[in-house]
Image 1 (cartoon, rainbow, N blue to C red):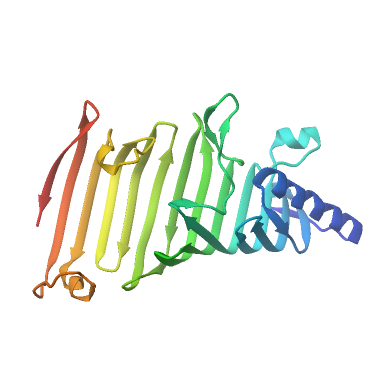
Image 2: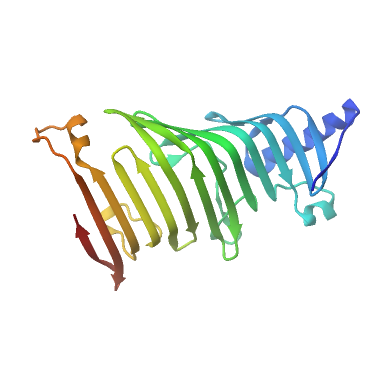
Length: 276
């Protein structure tokens, strides 16, 4: 149950907007353009409508119908506002990928004393939203019906849980429909853990569970060590006929299915795989 406190005077409304804009700038490094702002008392939150968030270098990051900022109790006792919790609802998010990294999101900085990286918030929730990915010149993507949560957990672990209703990816040889996307990921200083993940993209279906990869990633993928987990891959061979390959193939039909269980011994990956 939430109780909204309406700010009736234009002066109070303007002060609330200034507080929210300053908090987004200081905590996330983003420029915020906010519409009307009001308070929700239970649970306490600063709520803004008609939201636009911009990265100072790459421009528009997100537009949202609603932005909800949930400060920590510690900040409230100090008379300040931090971004303990952030909710984006009915948003359009644009991610810019260059040189293998997302460039227009808040930076994840190392902890004080050079420890593991920490998020600039405790929890970020995205509801009923769409995400576009600009990875030109390689591909662009649009993902719709996104529900996602990013939160910091004990031990400097970053937890990501996300799913989407669908979308498509456009690349040099065509457009691939995205029909399934769901993932649960945990990132720490030393490991990337994937309790579960599912992806269905055009002729390709991939799933993984209980997967672990040691961090940081080496520059050469052949040097990846400390890998374990179960992976399943299915591929529709008929799709090969639509690819622009430097060689010709006979017409193929059928489904290739790969099931693999991977473990590690002395840091080197070992596996058992079946192919049908």
